[in-house]
Image 1 (cartoon, rainbow, N blue to C red):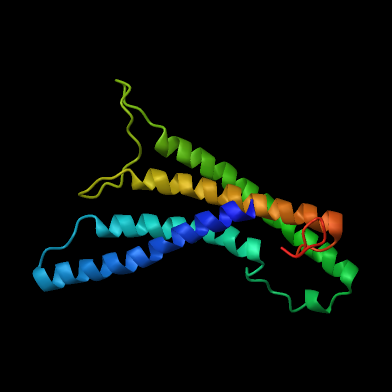
Image 2 (cartoon, helix red, strand yellow):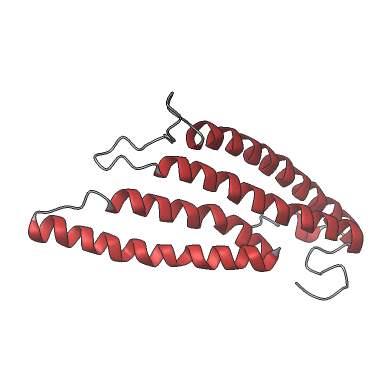
Amino acid sequence: MNWLIRKLSETASYGLGVIVVMMVFEVVARYGFGAPTFWAHEIAGLLGAVAFLLGGAYCMTGGSHMRVTALSDRFPPALKRVSEGLALCCGAIYLGALAYSGWLISQRSLFRYMPDGTWFPERSGSSWNTPLPAFIKFALFIGAVLFLAVVLRQLVTLVRTGDTRRNQDGTPH
């Protein structure tokens, strides 16, 4: 599972470089030639959202997510494991609810049809009027599910081995 999340996240991270190039192009086109693009901001929003939504799961797989451990670092090992287990349970509840609500909103925005059966997803309302908002909502669902999978895996590892930084066979992640 970690390899999939890492590959997806690393691929999505290239979108951040694309955003930089697009925004430079947009500024030059707008202010240098008086011909702004109609597509740059919507594409940048999509690429940034996808990278952001996959970033949480990516950081969690590598143990590089932010933690506030001012108190828990002083706990004895047993209490530290309980604290980490409680944090993972809270994260699982939150991400489960986020995945569920993400599925509901993506269903309402992505799977819409006209009376004649034509697919008509939610659109941006801009001059380009793309269906990108529907895809961003679906990306929210996918990102929450992947993040939830990482949290649940770490919770299972904590219960089995007492340490989330190790796999079930005792080797480091």
